[in-house]
Image 1 (cartoon, rainbow, N blue to C red):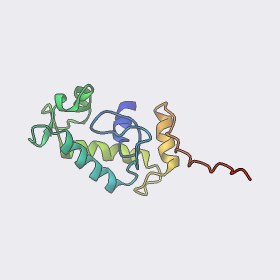
Image 2: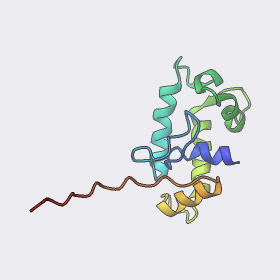
Image 3: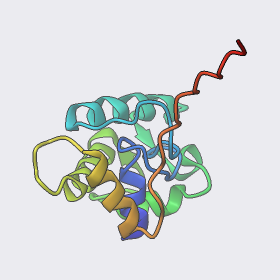
Image 4: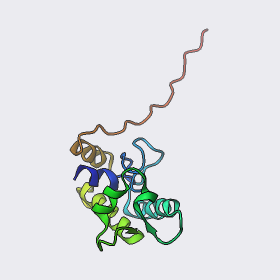
Amino acid sequence: MKTSILAAMAFAGLAAAPLLAQPAGGPNPPSTRAEVEQNMQQRFAARDANHDGFLTPDELGERGAMMIERADTDHDGKLSLAEATAAALARFDRADTNHDGTLSDEERAAAMAAMGQSAPQPTPAPQAQPQPN
């Protein structure tokens, strides 16, 4: 379960496996369902090395077999874009506790806490140094 949430939170800015995730603290993590779908399409296309419309364990890397086992709903040993997107959106929906289609910072932090991880902290803006008189 932790891995499922973790993988789907790619769009939510949480760490996970190569296809379904984006490193914690990554730039502008997707926060809406539409952004998740767009993110999945881009990541899927980038991983589909042979451009056959499916992802296999070797295209997904180290955790590929586990990812396919969890998201391969038709049990054909590979992931279609529809399967990958459906899995990501299901995890997004679980994290979107108020069901408004957007992940707030609080919902993101709660999802991370549920996985036993700390939420990524925003990088503070540099403060101006006092100038000598």
